[in-house]
Image 1 (tube, rainbow, N blue to C red):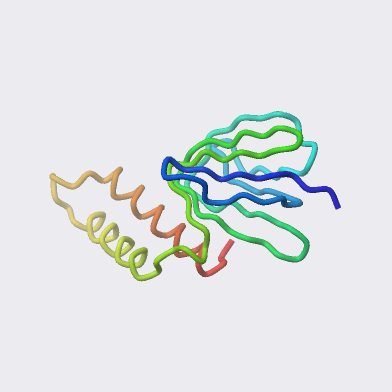
Image 2: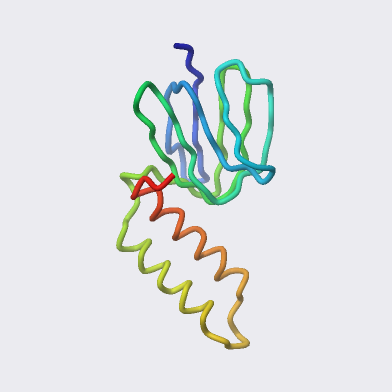
Length: 134
């Protein structure tokens, strides 16, 4: 089966670099499925999981926004942050989720609700990736 080279890169360095048969990502315009030979494309990403399929295996990478660039033979994901499922600290993500939920439940004027909602989405995404809920 044909494959496409995938690179996931953050400001801190590369997170993923391999050949896969299919890439699935959540863009602002909707879910994208990319196979080898896909037409060139650039799309902004939502907070979500990148699914990387090779054979019967599917790997997940949690990303917190960024951009996806597709060429016929290569997919590059430039993410603000990205973590493979096995690299995620579950205790830290659970604590971040708890803090974000508390901020959203508090009816205080000094709480930045948009920031708390984004923190909640990021923490939920990281936990869902570790539990393979995508």
